[in-house]
Image (cartoon, rainbow, N blue to C red):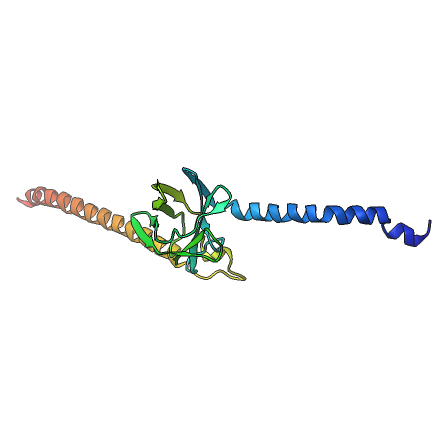
Length: 203
């Protein structure tokens, strides 16, 4: 056996590799797609499947993004829903009525948003798809602080700074109330002690 025959695969091995290469590539692409879609929320409404997620992931505070909404009926994309679906985002008590526009892929729609606070946003889907009325709540993936991607040094997180300032202000307010209470009690005690001291000084 020569060195060349040891290093190079045989014709039979080469044919086998060529035959299974498309299958391996398909598995790789399917795995990548599954991983990409794993972060999206999936809900059912009658015969329709709706997938909700961020267009750019991870979603970062202060970066322009969009909710990405896919609507399928079986394996067929549902088109023409930009005027029929109602998308409302909420964060705490704040709400935002999104403007839905069709994306390049059939059955895919975008609702542009510029998230300014980190945390989890709720998505309400209303309106209807043909005869199917929608009233669904979906949680979008958490919006992250920009510091998770900043390098080499993270910028100042203004949101965290504002929270810390609010906490310090609350602590300061508590200390002021405590000081006022202590001063009031001291004055009351002093007022009660003065008559006794004056009586003792009388001859």
